[in-house]
Length: 254
Image 1 (cartoon, rainbow, N blue to C red):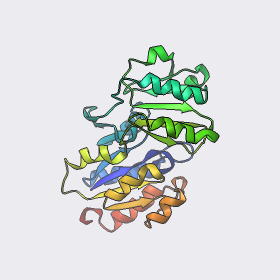
Image 2: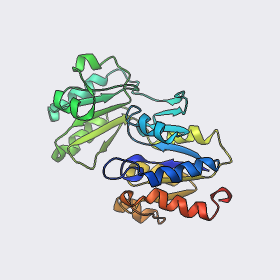
Image 3: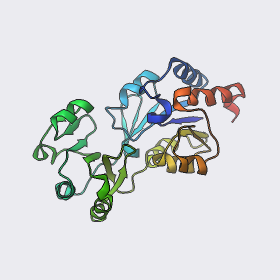
Image 4: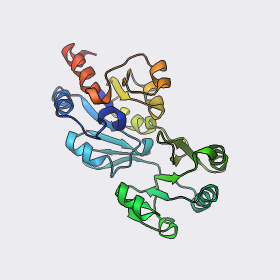
């Protein structure tokens, strides 16, 4: 079975950690022959440490736009390929002149020095960013002007997500969703069943395509209403709790 794990608010607790209990259960799953797949909107540099700790078989990051195996071989990649990226950035800054961040495969950059330090990015100017291979853009925004950002995006091959925190948004290449990357992994194991854990709208396409979609108790209401299989919250080892029950009922036969 392919065990697909979102990170924030799912595998990780509120302190951003994986508990010993969860690590032990996942190790037991691997010992029984099941594959562990990290499935995150995060960048590669913000997922690879967790992947290494878990010895994950695959890492699907950047909202499904970059997939690597456990030897760091890239098996799928989809970055911003259009030429007028800087025009998009300038239009966003005309709505609200806040900080701008971008993420490449191996680094993160931000125009604001304090924010760069906070998120572990390098300080960079827009001019220094423009020729980099970008997988994600992040903008500080005025949340009251959401409709203006949505209008700008219509002119570019991008997707936009307004994050839970409300003061920033994330841009990805058009058509981004986590399932795009997962398909590349699933194609390698056509006969394996799939189970996925997640908590919010970015997990929707994944949930719609796996055999067993499991929503966390702390999931957003729209996810909990749509997907009825629930486990405990991320602060109650919800992933481990559900997998342990499946292991006890012989996960290998599911």
